Length: 105
Image (cartoon, rainbow, N blue to C red; front, side, top):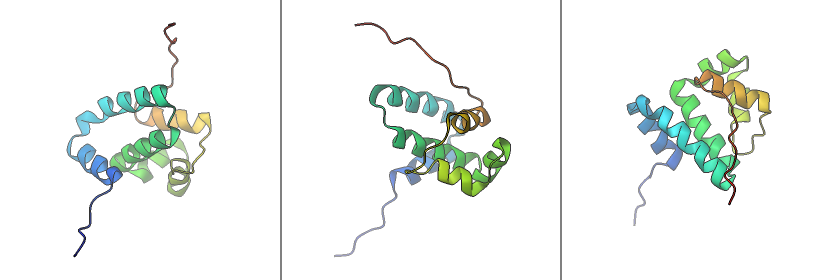
């Protein structure tokens, strides 16, 4: 039995965002809602990496004063970007970090 080559979730998301760049804002809002809900930093970094690929990894790196390789490493599954790097990446996408009070139960 032959196995087909299936796309990874990252590849599917990247293709979708390339075809639908107007959905990047909604995608960003969703990934940060998910981060707030479950704290999955690796998933957030993967999503930011997908957006950087769509916008151009080299161009994004240049905008924030990093090398392409440095940005890829920072947004990798084992990446541990500083808050400054994280903020610069968001700024390059037209966003900024902000806080919101958690509703009390």
